[in-house]
Length: 101
Image 1 (cartoon, helix red, strand yellow):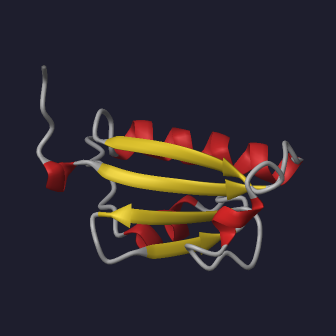
Image 2 (cartoon, helix red, strand yellow):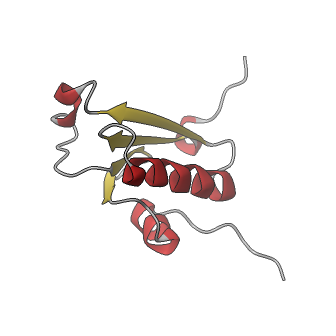
C-alpha cells in the first residue's frame, strides 16, 4: 500500500447546492488548479448541501459555493466560483508551480 506523507496531502472540501452553473464552474476550476499545482497530492470532497444540509454547520458555511482547505492548516475558506486563479492560490497558500521559459 502506497503511503503519502500526511503533511503533503491537501484535503479540500467544496460545498455546493446542486449542480448550478457556479457550482460546476467552481469544481472545474478547483480540479484544474489542483492538477496544475498539487498533482497527486490532493483530495477533493464535494458536499451537496441540498442532499446533506446538516453538514453546513460544521464548517460554518454561509454562502455557496465555498471551498474549505482542511489540511494543511491553517483552515482557509474561499467563497465563489474560484475563477480568479491568483486569488485562489493565495487564499489556499499554494505556491504556483514554477513556469520555465
